[in-house]
Length: 125
Image (cartoon, rainbow, N blue to C red; front, side, top):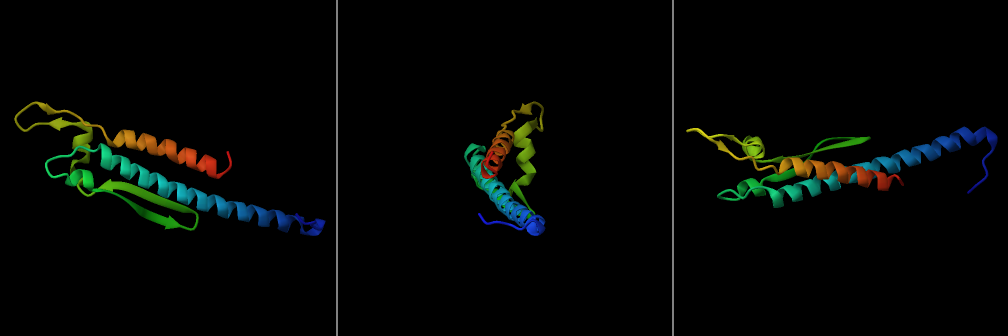
């Protein structure tokens, strides 16, 4: 720790705050990446198999947008057309219903909890 002249106090405080902001941004970007990868992994293990297993293997985590102060990631499936049908269930062609097989909602809840925990730990909370 060094002594700071009173005239340079504002500059020293700003320098410290800028360093903290940079560390916090990096920690939050890493937390978002870890959470997206964990959600993808959970979806691969909990998704319905189907006949070929393509649905289960189709989960991806990708960066949607990244700027200096933020990272937006998406977890999605290549066979996006049937995600909501499996998650919520649907009507059959000749009557009746196919039962819902919820797998996205639990992964989303776990991801939200994980992201909050990782950010809190990274910021020293």
